[in-house]
Image (cartoon, rainbow, N blue to C red; front, top):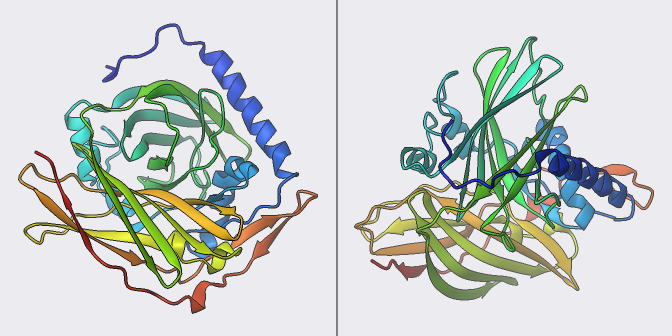
Length: 363
């Protein structure tokens, strides 16, 4: 299949895959030496918790909070129209992914690996200002159980696990043996423009699939500095910039709040409503946020993702708001590496009202 981006020739894939496996093993060892608190996104019901543990298995080794949506409403809509045959992105219900596929901005992979009668095809990858989007197709000789692949793929950057990330994963069940999946990976800082992306998918019965592909960020991304700050009821919000491309827009921000308990923090539950100068709402596809304890504060970073905007849009009105969880929970590891469930504590969180602000879009 054709490559939409320039690829690195003679890349040592086998060496990278060995590094991926070594990184996973190292992360599992590091878990024993860290006491980690993990908070689920409010979009995840209790019955989906098990899948999230797989996604957090690498990231928690770095002592970071990873908030992720196993299957958010936005992803459910995105996956709703994907057929068994065809481009996962092009046949999805996501405007941004369709635009990326239509304009040749995706890396079309088409690599298939089969383990234990289950074939996983990495269809295509998009790397834009919002992060990384993966589209893959899963076919099995036997019926697949619910949440067979947990919360999707773990990943590495040039053979190393990132310090932290957030994202979402969703599946469209085509039949008892066939599924299409879209996974979104958001990394707030320190991402190179091109790198070797390692991907690791785990099955419920111990199967493991490895992929390794060079990827490159799309060009023609406009960055609009914002530097908007406000403090409401102890929550500090700093909106850094807005990025615009053919695949969508994103808002980069950092938020913080005093405290030590992630379950009782509201700073990680910030979302944004965006409308243009004509009052048209821009659809949001927000994922999670990553966060960590810094002294007496919980600090969160994220890029919130939205549909592409038309060329006639000259101004956007952005309204931050809290999308507080209605259920959730987490898992905590002690010094011996043993885990225990953490019950949901967020039912008493108080909402706040942020001020709106305007952003001019350059021509």
